[in-house]
Length: 531
Image (cartoon, rainbow, N blue to C red; front, side):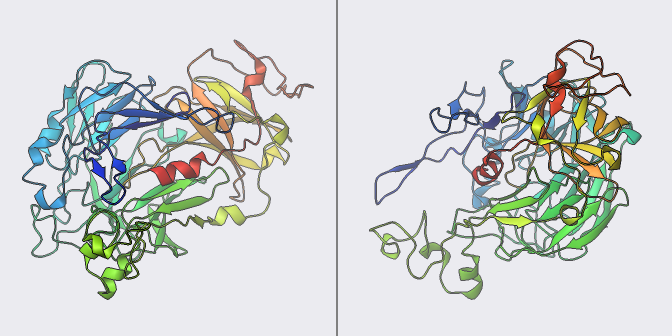
């Protein structure tokens, strides 16, 4: 959110009480919005807040932060579904969008009716140039003007190789890095999903298909935009339920997922994809090529996640089908295992844990992926004396001073990446913006900030300095938003005793533009686990 909090919208309609303990485990959460605000005083304030209910209940919607600071909430379903009765209940899907804070009644979106039932976790991204919102629902997509409500169709995928590129045939989508040389034009890339193998029909979701290795891309905001379909592929097996992470150097990591099947299924009860993909791939947007990266060692199937850390490394988390090995080996049947189904005789009544025949389905380990740039020498180091425990602020249209302990003239790029959360291969607010370096001397950089919230939606961002040898420094944190524009003159840059930049800013306090090493809380990892 614009204030750095984390917004969660909707939930499952299922209500469930544990039959052994009579303890409520799940309650209906379809029309609830929640906000998580990091605690400043270690546990004395409840970080969770339940806010106003939505106009229409939703499970598995798409959510995105707009330049205005509003959240747009798109699609989802109004009833609990299972893969077995998807088509029978498809008319319960919610073909509307609304906003938080509320702007009134939910608004019908014909695209979602057209693509029913393939509109769970639609891709929702505001375009940096027009400000229109691109909404992708499995193949077809539109640009939505959120002021007028007018939608403009975008050319649909003509691909016949894949099932719809959306849950449960889950692919993953990302906005490739925004760069000044391309006028911050947004290209969207969709990778993975499930292929239409022989004998597998679109209405027979329980049939499993091979995971796709293929990627397609489109630049939606360009008049007459068309897809470059299957223009590049993973150099190895495909992935369904992959996660994608924008890396600090502008490359893109693809990780997690399975090599066949679909998303969906209750934890440990049955699995629709019990053959994990351990391969990792790195995509270079500048060359449109993939390279293999070191393999993972921990399986990440349904309900997994991946997220970028402030030091440039990446963590993978989650998986509620860690007992996949039981099914692969034929050791047990699906309905014999913990947690929420099967005869009580097959559960340990004393502690409600899996029986000796069952593997715990929940994966508790976090795995760390270390990109090559992390181990390079001569990393840029942001001066720690200018950091605090909370982020500094930057207003749209302003520039800022960044002070380093290492030679500033070695820095060839300053990239910002937005704080994100991830769930179900969806990372809706993930965005990378390359900033312009206006001036450098031995210790100082003056950097041009983003022009507006269409390019960089308001909220918390990580600032990564990148050296000419490719080494990436530990990030500092900045909260970007609206306010008075401040500009620093150069080359007259000095350092005052209070740690603020010299020169003559116009419009506001100089101190708000000095950032140093910001130590982030464990919230980054926590969010990945929660999602």
